[in-house]
Length: 590
Image (cartoon, rainbow, N blue to C red):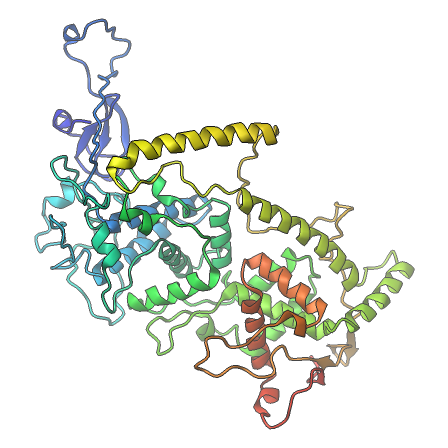
């Protein structure tokens, strides 16, 4: 790739409007800012100097092979920037609006670089051999027009200040500055990036260091700001299904970004993202960035518990009539209020609702109100529903908890088995091998090639069936239809067997309720509640395990959220601290 020979091409790039061109190995022009390759090629003027060649097309260029073995000089923040770009593009293909990448995520990332003093400030933290370009007071600074960018198609509208301290930042319409490639300058001996070693050792108080899991926290914050129809559990599931780059995301780096040594510890991930961990990182980053109050979560938003409860009732094949009951619980507990749902990072106690976990917890509470889930009442009510359905086959069937349990148990076991097999077969090694130094590159590449060949031979011997490609993304993991005879759809079933009419309202036939947590831990404890499966009924365990698998969270995490919903619903019971709570007690009729 030769930049000097491409200087004669003066047209602006159709994607980023920059005029900075290079030549590919095939002789085509590519933009050094956004790496957009055009159809235009460098024309061959003198064919006499090229022996044994024949012009087949006017636009065919000279084929060149030049390798930059040493690669670009790049910083760690540029690597994370590239991962964020790839994740934003993946979310765009999943149906998220382009504003998430072009405006929201860009602003968040720009603000992070400013707050962490890596860019967009007067004295960026670069202690390596060459100082990175930063924003200056002169808007016509040439660095903006000449240097290649990884996120050049991001626009950068002005960010709404939240009253926090504002760093010097006057050029909000300019893209991120990225370090220009140079063959004469080399990266650190111990890392491919310029500051890989220093970044690994950097421990500055008050600074949130960027990691690969935190890229997901950035994406989730952007999704929350846009009030998109993707929850945190959905995001992590899409990561598992390889729809969003996360594991081995570094293999999508440009070839010129050499990665080895300390970079491996920074960008290589060997575990799946955890819901609780990403949730905490979301709050941590939002607080660090001093983000303003997020847009309000109102009743017409997808993240409102009434909307999510409807979604999860459909997901787990429960009757549609239950949605009215979940809406009442949401109203009684106050978890549907705008102030409760809207994330405000600059509040005294910055926290955001676990929207998906909270909605599922409401459904668990409603199931306890209807069926008690004590391994006794739910089966008695099932016997009544079964007898009624046998005698009245033409009428709307009553919901049979036992039959629902059997259908869901079978479906859950099948889904779990496939999930475990997929995880067991997952290839953690990247296609782009990592090595500790440039000296080891040839050995590592040769070893990787040998491993790939052995894997192909072994897979041929073990399984002759063709490998199925990754499935298309979906908001639902379970699908229920009336036409499927093997799996009964309970959406249209009635709750008349568990409800009784009292005046003009319906109340539950069950007048008992047991609290999931009798006593909450003290404030200095790391957890709010404790969950020991042996202390709870088998029905409750199944419900908790079902929804925990659905959201890919720990059972204790969901149990804690159920306890918090109950604490809001039964305030009077928790206020009576002197009286001991019994395992089953009468509560206000629903």
